[in-house]
Length: 139
Image (cartoon, rainbow, N blue to C red; front, side, top):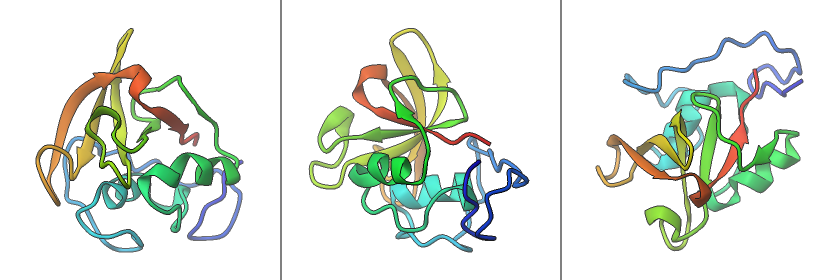
């Protein structure tokens, strides 16, 4: 069971808000800085993830503390890619997070905010699968 941070329950009754291909995006209930990668991923996964997981580089450890699986096996539309600082173009200080929207043998397609498109803008790109760890947002 995953913890729902809005209702503070551990039921699995929360719908999956998986509109990863288009907006509109919302700041309602989003505790991360608007326009950043963390804000975008929080907006996609909503209440099923923590409000204070820290900078992108800290998300794997924060998710594990919440009982989520973190490994090297991405699943499209169900995992968050967590990039260590400097990995695959991630910020050298804060790291980067994105939503996995496609998986192939050695690569993943991610949807991200504040990547190559810039602050507050989304884009997709293909990166090596080995460039990130993956948080499984099991519903």
